[in-house]
Image (cartoon, rainbow, N blue to C red):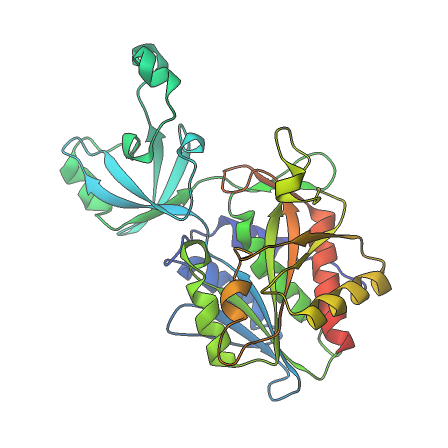
Length: 343
């Protein structure tokens, strides 16, 4: 299938502030783009839906989670410094010295993650890994009162890192895990216009990073005949990575087809056949138990929903410099659309 990506839509998605449980900005971007060619809605949980061919059969659910890892303010100190708790899985080492963007009382509030300068660290502190409780955010407030005028306990923030293009087709940004999934499912839906009589529902799900809660709600609500989950997967080629553990995925080498207990065999084989028919390169990845994606919850909803997983190779997951090769993103869109069109 011929495909021209909507890069303006992707950039808007990546720039949105949307940590787990607070995905409103990302949902608004998703729904605004989707309403041009689909019926849109948002459920009580926060998932965003785009429906193509309502009432058609089979009914196919395409899911990509739109939440990103973030932080939540747990305490405001007298000096105006903010103490933080994680929303999702953080390596605190990547937070040191980063810029943050908070959802404040009257709009976005910028800040930085602070730590004592290396000159005043004790020898023991220099050797130890920093813990999140040792870090703090500084929004430039002169005291607690000024800080509370702009945000309060419970305010959430994310890394303030805009998308940038590197050499070739390499894209680096915060939130590629997994705004890419939300992007891919909606782009596949756009590509499927006039190519299928199935009802296809693209869902940008919430709260995957803290337990895949949104996917469970969406699957129960829509009760599809089958589901396809789009997420990202570790690139196994960077220094120090163990391919025996993370698999054979590599930027630019193709999409990843997952197999394991939560992956329906027929859906997996259908994705593989569609990839081969379309000339889309792929690698296989095996899970021994859980996949760590929305698929784990979707597959066990109701009496069980046949579910497949399509992943995009990504470097430096859960960091401000997540990186993908955009060829793999385009391949994921084309493969998803081709699979559904063949049903």
